[in-house]
Image 1 (spheres, rainbow, N blue to C red):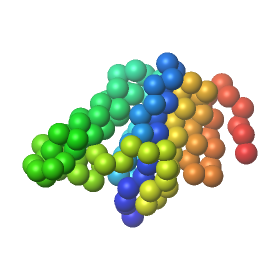
Image 2 (image 1 turned 45 degrees about the horizontal axis):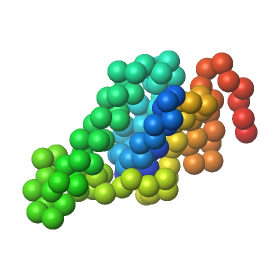
Image 3 (image 1 turned 180 degrees about the horizontal axis):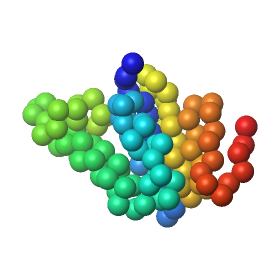
Image 4 (image 1 turned 30 degrees about the vertical axis):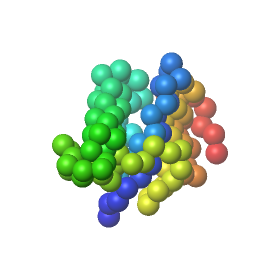
Length: 113
């Protein structure tokens, strides 16, 4: 089963990126040791791939001549709101991942339920 999910990424510096991604990315990005270690190259990969599609959407929304196949679907979402399969918030400033109603702390943090 797959579909769209809203992901908000809040980095240590407070920068927030709100994106729409396909659920099949979740295991790779959100359940990955590199995310927990806050590997900046890994985080940049997730954020920058979204920003490319968002930029493509903004530039080509009127013509529909998108550079990336999913830009028209992903690029129009920039909200802190659930879509299709819900929302995940990755808060690297407070070391916590919120996934709809499930809350999973990053290493060195107490579990909160």
